[in-house]
Every structure is written in C-alpha cells, then in structure tokens.
Length: 310
Image (tube, rainbow, N blue to C red; front, side, top):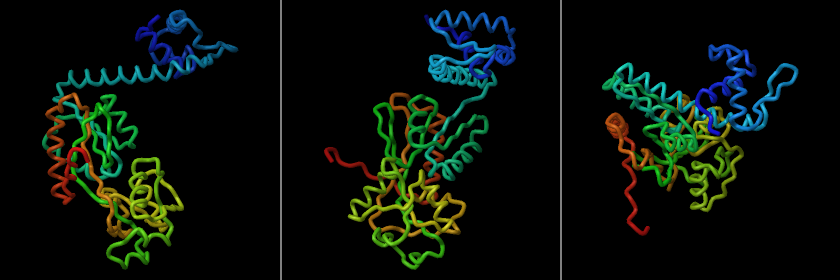
C-alpha cells in the first residue's frame, strides 16, 4: 500500500538519526508517537524496515534501498517549500543557472553580477557541475538554463549556440616551446602530456583531434577537467590542451604560457534548456546579458549550422 508524506518523514528521520529518540527530537514529537507511526509504516509496506538488536535499530537492506528514493521525494518537497516561501515573501522570481566548470569560473559569475544589478529583487542560484550532473539537473527541471562548452544531445533538451573558442596549449612559463608562436601536435610529442579520459566528452574532443592529425596520444597523466590540467601545468608537471574559457579564468595564468595549436578544433559554448517549456522572461533577460558579455570579451561567433544532409 502507498505511504503518505508523514510516514515517509518518520522513516527518514529514523534512518538519519538511527534511533526512535533521535527521530523524536528531530521532528518534535513524542517517542511513542514515532514508534507507533513507524510500526504502522512497516505494516503498510509489508516488510520490516529495521531490526531491533539489543535496544538499537539497524536498517534492513530493503530499508536502505527505500531510503534512496525517499531522499529524492524529501528534496522535492523541500523545493516546494522553498518556492512557497519565496512567493509568500513577494519575491518577483527565481533564476537557477548551471554551467560546466570551464565557462563557470569567470564568465557566468560576471554575467550574473551584471544581471543582479538590473534585477536586484531576483533570487539567484548558480552551480558549476560536471557534464552528467548538469544534464540531469536540466532534465529534472532543477535548473532554468545550462551553459556548457561541449555538445549535448537529448530529445527533451533544446541547444542554442552562444559563442565559440578553440583548444589551445598551455605550457609552464619557462618551457622551451614558449619560443614558438604556433604549435603543432607533433611539437608536444617529446614532452609529458596531461590529458583526459577518452570516454569523457572533453577527452573525446582531444582524442579525435589527435586522430585527425595522425598523432599518437600518449598522456603520462589523465585528469578530470581542464582546470585540473591548468593546475598541473602551473606546477611544471607537463603540457596540456585546454579550452580558452579555462585559460582566461585561471588565477595562476602568470605561471603559464598559452600558445595556439595549428588546426585545433573549435569548441562551441551552448545554452541548454527544456525543449517544450518556454523560457521565462528572467531567463531571457539573463541570456541577453550573457550574449552582450561574450561579444564584449571577444569570443568567437557561434559555428554556422551544417546544411541538411551533412
């Protein structure tokens, strides 16, 4: 039989605190009431949620599986409560932005600051997330807009070009390759290369570039992001290919030298949102600020669309 929200709340409180008394204190109800509701919950689900051993409660394997879903429900209820509070306080709107780390280190905070000056009454939320988590937030409607420097495809998502930039090479400031104006991938072959997991979206871009240039890709270290790569290059660990967004936002850029790479692929930053849901006026206003900012900072125009059939 179905559980109601009160039973879910009791179960979650016992799981978190590990005891009837802890759940009682957390929910501000009596211990007998917690025990009674917990017993009724077990009757409703048809199996034991806890084993009682020497006066202590131990969650059953079934309870642990159930708890994972209960947490999702609880977070959804919390978001409803937060929205209700915002509406009660007469706030004019909420804007939830997510971005990939490269573009989110500097460009998005700058755009949010400009937006905040024009819309001081709006509540803002901003998170830098990895590719998978960003996509999940958008699909779960936990974000109004995503900004990502990699391609993203899903039938429920609409992807709109924002601007473009290139892969570049970052070198330690005293590296011998800094004497050259433009590098080729072959120039990097003798030096320790910091790269990425080839199964990751960014690693795939680097891997295809090496393949197109018919160069062997033999990194001595793989890292999770261009920001990790910049940090290691700054320390003198090796050389790396990164995106221009990461370079421009890197605090330790004085310890690195950036060089263009011949025939480097162009990366396109994209705006991503739910396909069948119209953008709010607040989201459109933020996009306007962001487009003006990328233009003012000299980022490239979006890539032209390929003709049909290509």
